[in-house]
Image (tube, rainbow, N blue to C red; front, top):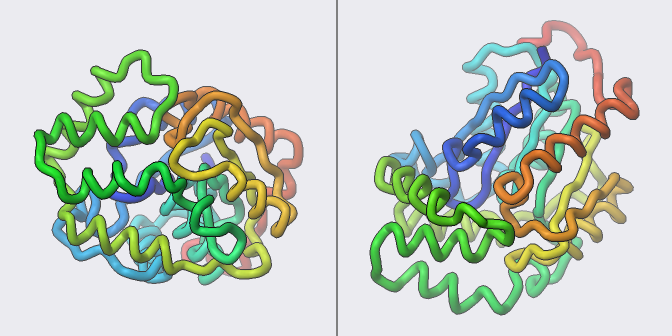
Length: 264
């Protein structure tokens, strides 16, 4: 079995993957998915979120060591989680041999108005300071992140239950936003093989960010024509199939033999 670590984005947690983990394991041969929460989210919502992506990466490294799984692993991550994956792969190359980065953006490759589209400034501010019910809050987030939500009521209800069980504090949301804003990716790609996936109809983050990163790091980029920011939610089958094809086409490129003890 090949261990895949999944990382979500800003204020999101493991449960937000929904049925995508099952879809992925059924599509990608020998995949075993482990979902990790970033500090401040999910089961770790009692912790203060780090204000540096590099600290989040160190948390993931420690969590992987505690799980005692064979390394290197592969990582699939979106948005803020993708920044963490890059920092993690750079700091601990023995942990990761492949990364799939979804709808992410990073300095210095993209300007701020591409990293967060200006049309979202006011809606996000309203989410941060306005009242309303948890359901209204989650429905608004869904509206910002999804384009193909025929079952929006079902998703909103599920996200509302997640929020009620493991709320993310406003302070932690701001700390995560600060970490994402200040993170600066390396000029050169980490050693891990990388696939970029992006949505051309992502109204939160411009797909130009993924195009710029792919050009700078000479990575393969695949674009979805109609999904929103939460690509695994909108078309999880497409995501899993892109990963399967990528691995199948050049399997040797995505497997490194770790030196010494793989669990080190």
